[in-house]
Image 1 (cartoon, rainbow, N blue to C red):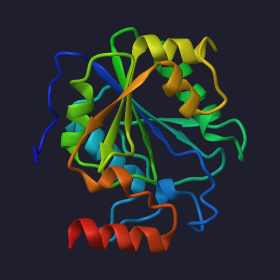
Image 2: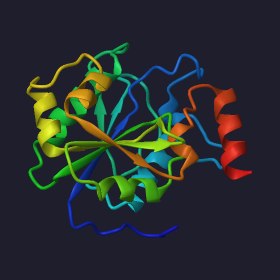
Image 3: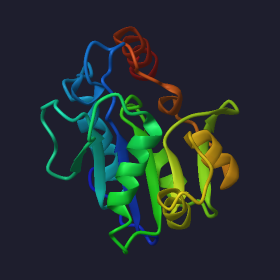
Image 4: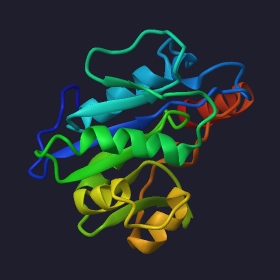
Amino acid sequence: MPSGPIFLSSPTAGLILAGGAGRRFGGPKAFAHLPDGRTFLQACVEVMHRGGLAPLAATLPPDVTGDIPDTVQPLRLPQSGLDMFASIMLGLQHLVDDPNWRKLILLPVDHPLVQTETITTLIAQEGPAAIPTLDKRHGHPIMISRTVAEAITEERLPGPTLREVLRAAPAHDVPVEDRGIRANCNTPEALREAWSVING
């Protein structure tokens, strides 16, 4: 695994979706800890940084405090209880102000075990959007083009969920060998199981 960031021919931004209350986890997952001591947010920021993504932003709960890496711009949601699409809208509205990126990687914070190679594979894709698959099953993160990101912020693509947006974009599937794309660590039990399977 590369120790430093990869420099990309197609500038790519990153958005971590971490604004949920994490009720099933017992608290916001952004600041929950992996067995190696890192928070979910730290792990997501690190894999995006290694993938060469910039700028990086993360949507966060409005009133929760925790260790936020210096390399990510925190974006506080205006209120708790907003759905994922509202979180995506907030993040994209912030990031589209930067004219320098052409693609964007969207990573939910409850998928902190994704590999760098998956990030770079998605960045290499052409087209409106790309979704990684493992054994023909969709996972996270996803790649969207700047054109799609702007269409979302301008409400020119259907919602109210990301699924409808990706269907309309349209998105294409990208097979990868990364169990982390399917490792939805939304409960402590799911985290323990995924960590055991991926790390042995």
